[in-house]
Image 1 (cartoon, rainbow, N blue to C red):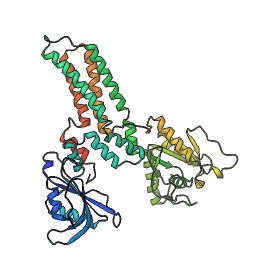
Image 2 (cartoon, rainbow, N blue to C red):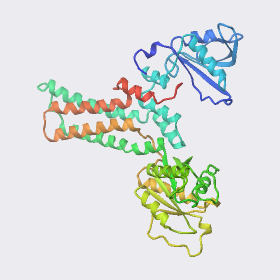
Image 3 (tube, helix red, strand yellow):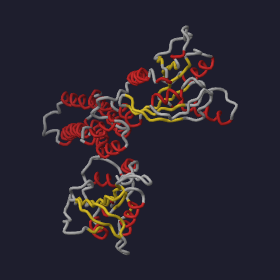
Image 4 (tube, one colour):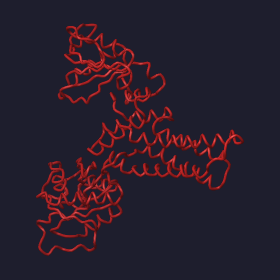
Length: 460
């Protein structure tokens, strides 16, 4: 997708998720100079309904060639500049499912629109000045949010809570650059540069850059979630633990060892953090070829997990097999789960060494789940990845740009400390200004836009 000439075409796309045989409403969206003209060809509004901006019209969609009735629908007009893209936008709100929306989209394409590329509606909103780049990325985050906290942080970004401080930091850097360049060009006509004030301003900018950068890990956690693998030898209750935790029957539970042959996944939210829980096959030396594959996938899942729940059976205590599994995963963040504590003998076999944290559960009776979640949150907190009450949380692209800005600002400080000429100051100041401008989109290349908006869904 390219930004060049993108505003000269009228685009169309299905703007709602379409599920076969389900969904009460589907929306087909048009944006561009010919949007209203195409709508007039397709939509018949009975009576004397006025085609005014921001009015909902009731009527029928017909094939202009065959006059065949396609659907009974509502149509929403949003004329430029009061629309999402700041172009003329038309939305057909038709019946859901597959056939109606696909037929209406096809009619729009036959009348001269072209199929929108991923994120192209939001790209137009950015190019037309309705959104900055941080707000556009926040829209994608909001659509893909997997927890209330992630959605709240995305909304904060959409309201400009990241863009505002970044613009202010960039404005301060521009002011410093202007003062420095003025001394270079008109040294004899101006008083000497207040070096102390420049140092103070740079220190303040750098401190705020570092403060915003510190939200990168939290932002990544909110967006991608925490991957947790439940591992252990066969028949220790891993699947029962998953079922109790997710309050479902995602995993098959029997008394036979080796029941789980593959990795079973469940999506949860713990303390506002999206959690992807992986119930793995029991790790042991398997003879069955299918089970061998499952065991190998379990090992891979454990190595890729952010957190491992090493589960053992309280009835048998710590075994040689548990020790072997522990040695494979001990380098990962780990919580020891002692399951089936309700069946444990009164003289429970002690562990050979202390493992922290340790949680006792009786998964078959849904006991110990709250303690497990508390231990997970404490482990996350220890990694400085707490996700609550965030006003903003930057993504990887924004973090990379801020890191470049931080490096450039530190280099300016070094240049001043070494008493180098003012020309040297300007080099790194411009680098910092450019990096900060990339975050909001004031300085951005076409390739960066392509990379950002290609991750959007079609229709947004």
